[in-house]
Image 1 (cartoon, rainbow, N blue to C red):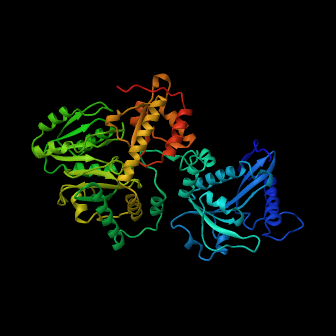
Image 2: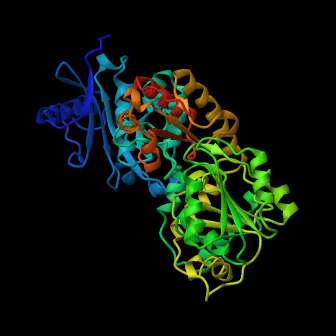
Image 3: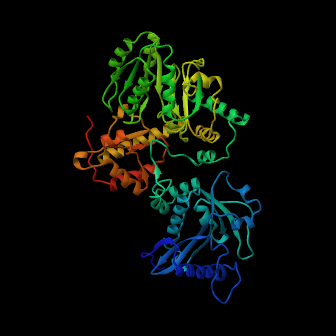
Length: 547
């Protein structure tokens, strides 16, 4: 067996490489596998050569392995399998892989695994999530081990028969975890690379293929019965998830949802209280000021929890009928503020509770029973795309056309079942798909992975802003020591080069030299293990102390 220690892998670009491809193609698919008739030139040019991209293995300036990939339809399998798409998973972006060939002396080396790994990265980076092949019947066990699923009858002439097969992105991820060789090659799923980093941002968040496919579906009219039926189903699912009585789905962001809440609090005009211990609590203050609300403010330093005695005293200073507004998950610090604990105190004094659950809904259990108004969005913890503002309400407000702009008038949206204006069926479809994948199992995965990740980060010496007893599992904010020369944006750039997107660019993070790891997209344990390895390689970055 010949050693393969000097191997390297690349996309074919040179004239000599293409000539070597034609000759390896001939040796494999004419001389070894009698798929094509012989010719005196000893070279076989594939009929799709002009459209193929070849991943090749080079050893000592000699081509020893190759795979061809091609995304254009029709595939070669289209001519062999009638109605090919009927055999494939729906709503996918397929690519065909063909012409797998490895010189005999290199078939028991790392060549095949490395070719497979390089090809997978190229396909992922190009946005493909389904690979179709004609697998030689001589290697069906190997293809099955890699996660390929057979379909349809055998194709090809006698002596050169092939089994049509496909491999989904999810199937490949499962295979990469089960195979020691591939697990070393793919430490995280999906596979990180500088051109397609793994998304660990707090928004937009990591999405699943099902959510992506729903977003890419053809748009339908927001006035159609089909769309209105879909939107009604989404609203019912959101209420079932939270225990809320009603919810309006409004095109826009979580900030719009908070602007709608602020507009509603103008009537009746009573005094309120805003609790703030981070950037997003401060934003509620700005919303309230812009809406002309009368309110007091209870503020504690960022990263610190509110003391129950202070909250109780502040609530007792409010008049009956007043309101309280706060952020459940303060994303800037990763702190999880109380929710259920406020309900008995508010009920005693007839206070209206209003809460921002933009970054907690979908990531942790959220019970909105007893809540007057709540704001959220389609992205973040729900795992869909941003673009839909969600406003939950316990009562049905009357429209206020003389007092509020239509877009900020919750009664206006309620009177039209959330469709008084143009809506996006694509965003609603993506949210529908995300809600199917949400619930308690998602909450538990995020909590379990966050517990493991926090322990690993502390072992590596990182400083986590939110104390564990008050932390939300969905976001971990790390503080760096600027006086020691550590820069959060530099760290984010290094991690992006390693294949991971983290948030360090928001103004409030830049000012404090903080960087965030978000689990809002429900990343896998393997992804987080890869991130920890990248963080370890990115040292030294001195951790800061949080006051």
